[in-house]
Image 1 (cartoon, rainbow, N blue to C red):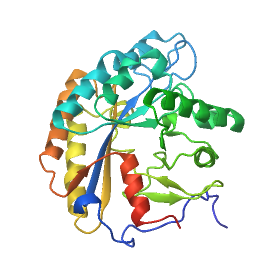
Image 2: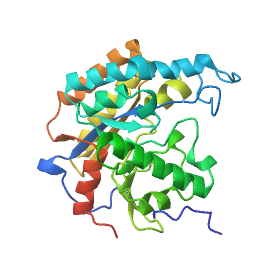
Image 3: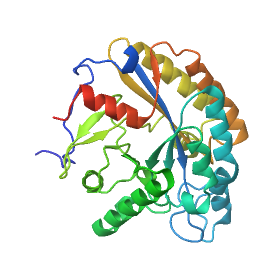
Image 4: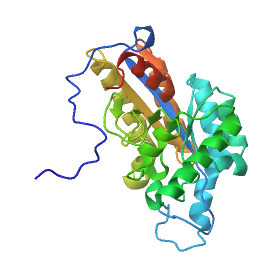
Length: 294
């Protein structure tokens, strides 16, 4: 008897894929995602706490996250400008009202803006279908108002899409999602509203699970970035692949961590032969042009 399945994609071994290059003959595509999040005070989720299990109001964990909106975001933006990497900003739409200087800092660097829900205090898989549809529409309109163009990509708060998130995204004109950490290449997903691309997004090379769940050091995270980069550069000699690095402003933006992250990013940019530093939207566009939706 077959196990229950999502029905979004079939299994495909990476050793059996169509050949193609990234733009300019590059073989490795790299993007750096910066999560810009706002959490409700005295309401909603307090998981992932620096001190878990605290009851509301939880000013300690709220303040830890708020550090990212007051300090960390700007330090991370300065670092990306210094190393010459165009950022991808994953934004809760509440950021535009709460801390408009945060999207402005990344806008100044030519960032691509990805919709990251309304707030990380609530996840899509906790909403009714209609509430989720309304939330996606609200988020899309807020980013359109802030950036002058609608977002094309989506990342669910908490990386927790519902059973219908992909259907609603395709319905509202999104072209890709970052919710499925399943591959080193983009993957076409099936939805009731047409095809949607899954662009690689990291569960592992991601400062949140590294620091919060696994309690690793900044030095370990930096080594994870450089080792992933070096290994995938070698893999890319055989086939094109994607490396994404995920940062959170309240985590990577801490001074002692940022110094190590900066060194890892500098390692990548100093070994840029055959590497395309880009954004997930550009990856999605190119992939769709060379591997059309089935």
